[in-house]
Length: 239
Image (cartoon, rainbow, N blue to C red; front, side, top):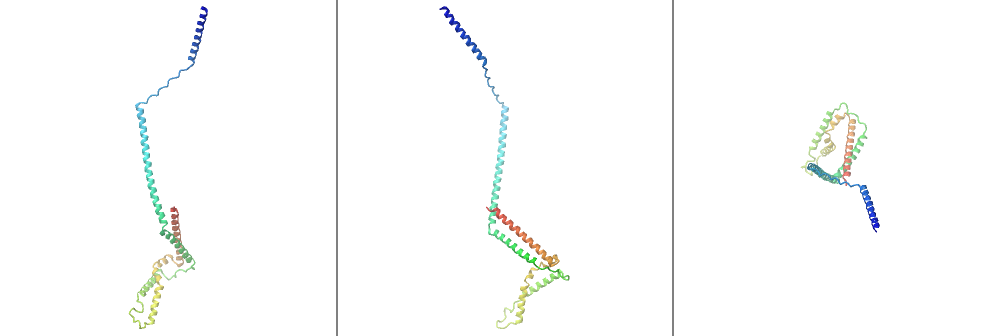
């Protein structure tokens, strides 16, 4: 019994030794986990610098926002003015006055084209007679206008107080008819004030015709350009 007791004792010691060896080996294989390094707290000077930078950025953003708001208000004002102007232009372009103006320009083009064709179709005109001066032409025109004024100021025949039952001399009635005929025929003389100047600058009637053709072309081109601009404006402002 004593031997058997010692065997159990030796067996128990052996198991304890084995467990100790295993425990020591395991403790040698495991690596210790390092402790986290604490982040150093910012100093007071660093915190103040960061706050100042944030405040500067905020002020910059606020200034940029104010600038954008001002530009937006200006753009809105410009848009309102432009819209009002376009509405006014549209009202004008659709008004009867605008349409009548375009039609009048078309009529001017038509008339000048016909007149230019007529002037171009005239035969070659001779130059002014060498003995006839512009001064003499001017004197003749003035004399004719003066005679026309004299005849126009004469009283009509028979006089208003002539007795209705008494025949008025036929010769005087014929003279009065001739007077009226001359007045009617020379009515165009009132518009001859610029003829001497035209003749003087032209030098000949044929040169005068060339100047008239050039003038009529200018009128036609101007009317065409004006009509084109008016029609383009009306097209652009139409909704």
